[in-house]
Image 1 (tube, helix red, strand yellow):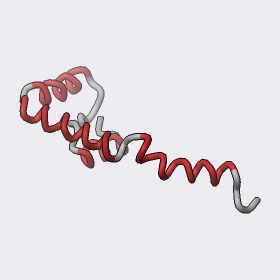
Image 2 (tube, rainbow, N blue to C red):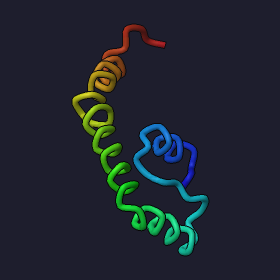
Image 3 (cartoon, rainbow, N blue to C red):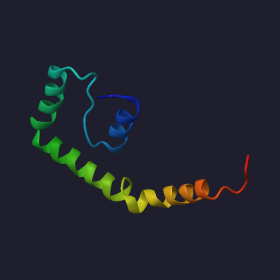
Length: 79
């Protein structure tokens, strides 16, 4: 659905389509939109794979997360 973070991520990566709600007919429409166009489906797939390989993976995300976890574990100052 086009929830704030999911919609933003979908638009940012161009790796899918968004739907306005979870009504069965709306879900079916979104699925059919992707399945009806082989070229578009391949483009969305390639964009999703690219996003996973370059941004949304442990190797990349750990560069931000591990220092954050270490800071939480060993705070420099106590409040």
